[in-house]
Length: 129
Image 1 (cartoon, rainbow, N blue to C red):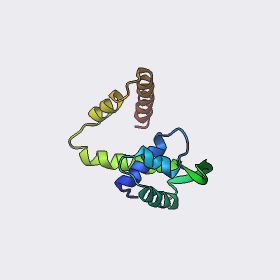
Image 2 (image 1 turned 45 degrees about the vertical axis):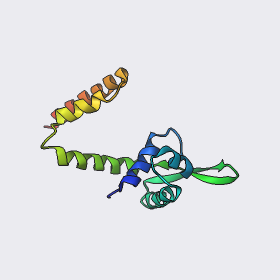
Image 3 (image 1 turned 90 degrees about the horizontal axis):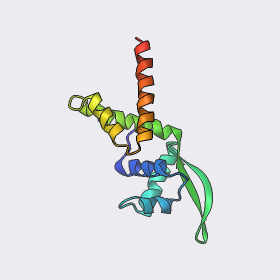
């Protein structure tokens, strides 16, 4: 499934939030997003089961639905990330990419946890040979 930049931005906002958001909160979280754009994007993402309505809340004097990303959206975003990497694979080695991703985290404990998980993944992959 192809997602346009606005759809990717809305999914990113929802994934980064620790709670479900109203469309207005999504608009306020993104650069250059408008209410009409967010509502159209949410309709498409709902239809494709990439977001779901997680509740209803009061927003001023009206009731507003709150939205959250689904597990299915993680698969779609992963696929997009891997397709993007695939197009640069001949230029950027897997070692450079992984090292860059690990160095993005300023949290040393999180980085150490990620390294341990990668070591286990590599060990499991070696065993499959």
